[in-house]
Amino acid sequence: MEEYPRYISISKGFKPFDPLELAKRTEEIVCHNSSRKYTAFYCTGVYRGISTAYTVGCPLRCVFCWVSFSRDFPKEYGEFYTPEKVFENLVSNARKSKVKSLRISGGEPTLCRAHLLKVLDLVTSVDFLFILESSGILLGHDPSYAKALKKYPNIYVRISLKAGTAEGFQRRTGAIGDYYKLPFQAIKNLKRAGVSFHVASMSDPRLMPVSERREMFKNLRDVDYWDYLEEETCDPYDTSIIRLEKAGFDIWK
Ligand code: SF4
Image 1 (cartoon, rainbow, N blue to C red):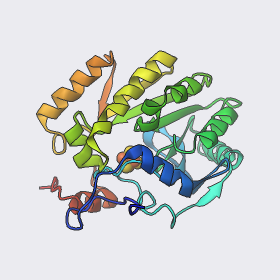
Image 2: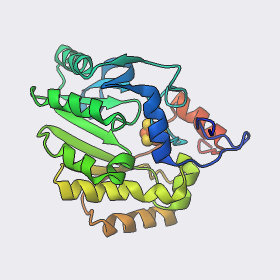
Image 3: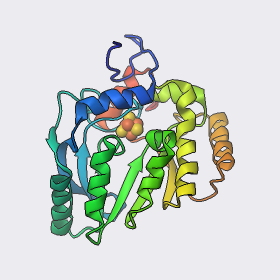
């Protein structure tokens, strides 16, 4: 079996991977029955205050990623939490800090589907908004996942695009370029399912060339997305700096 993909390294060589395959391999490490690995629970100031469960595991290896090295070494980090315990921690921290939103961050929340859906079931019993931040890989691959989200009245999805072309996707996420279409497919699937969402993109001009940004807009038009696009910039987190450097990007000049 191929070595588990970690951060992209130009000096060691890096073979592009199948993100659906990596999703499965990561789930074998971070999901157990309906439990999932987490490293922390806390509130933070984004979204005007949000209670956060910091999870482990992602099927992409974005060079600009700010999350901890739990992404790259999921075996070494985190402990398993049941959906009930995750829900309890999210809500008790939210009440203590008087914030109105909840999320799972630190990795891809749509891994471990049974776990996420159970957390969302529990969230329907309280008056909080659950913001589901996703790269759209699994939501694009399986339309039934987007449909399953429709039954939750208090969730809002934020799909985060990493690239506008196959080449940009492979260079900046480590995944095989052809899979760049999955997040756009996720937009289609969410629209069809009638789930509330908006799209964000890591289209920082230091990372995404103008021609690729143009392609990204074309792809968005092709999936009939005309709403707000939240364009992100890459911030100098310690982990992002290291990952960018290892992958041969020098954007801080
Ligand atoms: S930026 Fe998001 S999608 Fe990309 S590797 Fe990090 S956690 Fe995964």
